[in-house]
Length: 545
Ligand code: G1P
Ligand code: ZN
Image: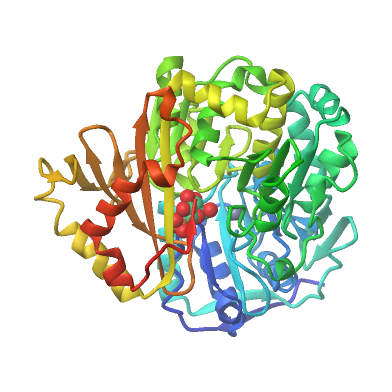
């Protein structure tokens, strides 16, 4: 019997422009009739040459994940996809999905996640489309999808029963083959190839103590399988390891504010030697030592500097890339290694071309994202394993390793101040106010500093020459300090202003300063230039990293 396909009439929604990381909206928006379907059909409409090929599908387990997967399976069948690999229970971390797309030569993947945003019926949901290299769709693809969303008039969906997402093995949706696969196995094998599991096992079976907080999000099953079952970490090393549809009511973002349970464990007497957390979809990481926070920008630099200690990277790095607002600590490592360091706009999609062309091996963002050429997404557990491998080799504490790094390279004091959920009109006014000063600022004194440059960051991709403009306002000073202002592209309510601050300190005797103290003069100036307090009505940021 031929597959029954229903063609459903629809009209466009005007708000389906993908942001920094896919389309993110509140759950009720995605539940609006045709909303998800329009976006999925627009994605298929924007692609060619996928008929009969393989698609990877999974999500971070948040509310609406299972429902959306059943809908997407039926639409994939109706649109002629040959086979879909779906994670058991509908679960796939973002890096695991990237790994599977590459390994099984899929034409792409659909990852259902709103990353670190809260979940649940009133929380957020999201759809990310990844391309054949395993990475987030580049701008030309997301723009093409957006164009389709503006004129869509119908979508196709197979009339078929829901599949059992929990039973491993092959099944069928209409004419499309479906295989429910183990969400962890292939990813765990890839990790075993990159890292010295024997060394890490020795470390974890010694009196070394570790706490991995999965924040009730997707990394729970991965972390338990890798750390506890394979690497011999004590039972209970992984906390909050059951993925929950609402992340237990928490905000699955591994930073000092939202991962407070882990922070309390790590900042006390007799704290564990090593602490880590990951986000909703498993691509972010936070690294902590005993009473010590590792700034993500420093973590990127340190991973690069120590890469040859790790088997998968023992031949050295081809280059490093960091997003523009990320601190320049990585640049110093690249300089010492005699390799290139690229500066890209915010968002992982900008690393894809550089990785594919082997211009870089390691890349990262200040927003708790680090990764390498092993997949095309940032990878939270990869970063945790990288740190464990370094710790196992160096047999020093996290703090000693970071302090030694600063002694060698100098310290890039760094902080990000987020003003979440502010009024969009005021946020736009603030950015417009900054833009209006860009012409006159260069050469001017500002407090004790002199402005060297002021611009709105624009990036020309070195591989395909595509240009991305308006990627954040930078004000740089003659001593190398800088401040950057951007509006978030991942929030769903109001606007979020991100202020990034950086200064460089070569003098070792000053390395122990609190970054908020070291950066105080810049913090004051940022408010003066941008009128943050006046325009947002906020006295303080909501999150300080
Ligand atoms: C944020 C981070 C950015 C990251 C993205 C997806 O985007 O700042 O570095 O790539 O989430 O995890 P933003 O909200 O700033 O647009
Ligand atoms: Zn994420």
